[in-house]
Length: 535
Image 1 (tube, rainbow, N blue to C red):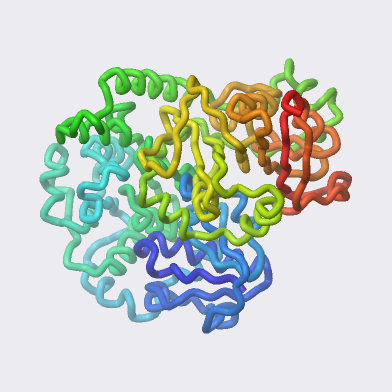
Image 2 (tube, helix red, strand yellow):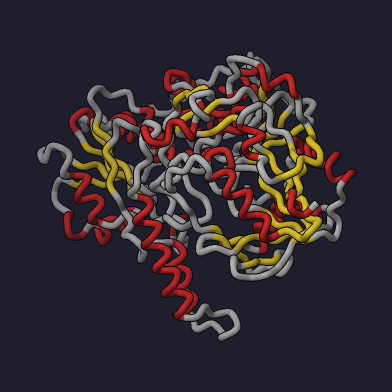
């Protein structure tokens, strides 16, 4: 049994289509039924899910919360097991089969009859559809509103003789927004329900998406031969705490809607604060802003460094430990969307405390029982899912984070430390990203020893008797270029050089020799480490 109780209440129709597709596909893969409450899709589509969907929520023992910093594809979501409550957006085509969703999201008889009759005089097979979303984006800096230049560039890709059908939630604003390109070719199709707009958009020969999963699905589901789609590069404003690199389909044409720096979320927030005339106690200094701009330009420079598709020849020996490590390939390029700015608000921390990841609790609680964290100062790695802050606060620990140009908080429950600050923690926790460091996946420098160097850098934050809680992928040694390492009998001792393993929770030594493991079959145990120099 898989359950998604938030489905239908977490986002509008576009979001719900992603959530349902993820839930049903995962349930099929596991061979278990799924439960979700009634949602819009039940009214609109021929889902035919009675033989797969449970009428009520069954036994649930685990929960999975999608990482807040990425609502696209996350490998951890593929490790969800039976009896799990699911929360998140899951906006990636890598989670479902295209033919399945085409079948599931076929309209019920009668739903589209009125709209089809109303616009029977229009030949949609010779028309361009464009979508403009205004309503819920007012005052929301997390989503950029595509300017008229975006639509001008998009329309250059299509036949200039085709009529342009405009779909929008605010017809009165369209002409003003598109004033410089408005002409007789444009026709606003208004007065329709959202599901009728959804149906009509799917009929268009070509289509221009707005920053909206509603229009994304209309483009994706259209069953039109030789259809051309134009979509934004940015589906969430750069610099916002979450991102989604997976909405960019390979056969679509993508156009940038945001300018470097000045359209960045963090820049706009700072500009907003200065404009509002905040008190000196809460206002960032101009010096800090200048430093941030410098860091932002460095981010842009790094973002243009595409990771190599193959291991550089001069580094093969070091990456493979003289070719003793198996090399597989799963090329990943997140260089354009990282690092992302995360401003951890009080509301986010409260949400972290309330949300309990049962799988994480099951792994960590035996360690907490043996190595208590109550009233301990604990550093959370800047690369980790910040929900670990909630775990620490629930167990009365005093968490801290490394302050960087892309990670900060003003909540007094969390201590922020700068790299120059001489503050020591009782413990540090790292549960992600170590295995992918130095592979170029996020635009960083290619370095075979980046994982080791990062662990060594954590020593400066620890007290003399401090402990490092580390989780990494464990199995038979392999390098999956450029996605991840799997640590086994060769890579684990290399990673732990300079550390003593005090204890390992959830470890199975037999997995280190098991051949032909998929990533889903690898372990992620918890190692308790202590620097050798401190023993």
